[in-house]
Image (tube, rainbow, N blue to C red; front, side):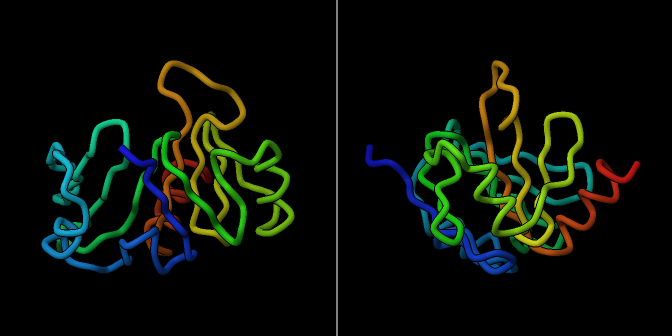
Length: 144
């Protein structure tokens, strides 16, 4: 299979997935098998194993895309998984991240990086989020 490519436009889209799109529309954009998981808040997540996850709000609108390390993802010309100095490049472009445990949060980019500083068994991932989602994440996990 060819490597999946995602060009990220902060707060607008991740590859072909536009924030706010309905899950019925998002489902037609990739033909792979996925697991459909209900979320505690009444939303749903479509998990394409070892590739990416689409996260939908209770109203069935896309609010985040979580990319696994095997994807090719770029934001303003910065490759999230392939640039050796990705953290410095992101800090230069979007200011220094907020940190919590294994997360690096770039509020100006709508970006949450997991395990980019310390790796464990799950590997790195990047969550690309709409504004409301990242604001909620910061409130719940970073500003405790």
